[in-house]
Image (cartoon, rainbow, N blue to C red; front, side, top):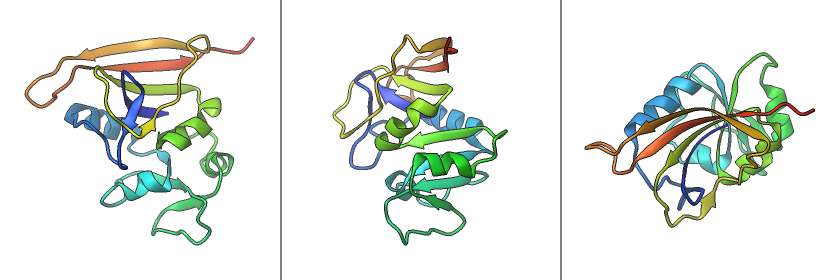
Length: 160
């Protein structure tokens, strides 16, 4: 999973992000390029066009929904089944899809935006007993970034 979330787990409002972090966009592109990305229909429709150099898998309840050059499915299980078993797959949102995908995730690439926002879409709570924080990189606010943020990589702890 990959997401940028506020301190209050806010993801966005009105199908858009509530912050602009160019370095986070660059990181998202670097991590997801060349891979399968799974998203909900609303997330897909928030893009001006499909993201280059990625295979898009879209989850929707709409039976006749079929954008060009995308794989359309109707469940998280079907979405995961469409990606090759040895391939890195990124869940990229939105809120409902993150909730559905969390039990299947083994890694979360999180950008924690150090502020709280009014939002209508939220990232699910992570049970920190199930996850190990393996890496953190702090990015202070600057002339291009209005907020401090931290890149966090969580790895699911093995189940004993």
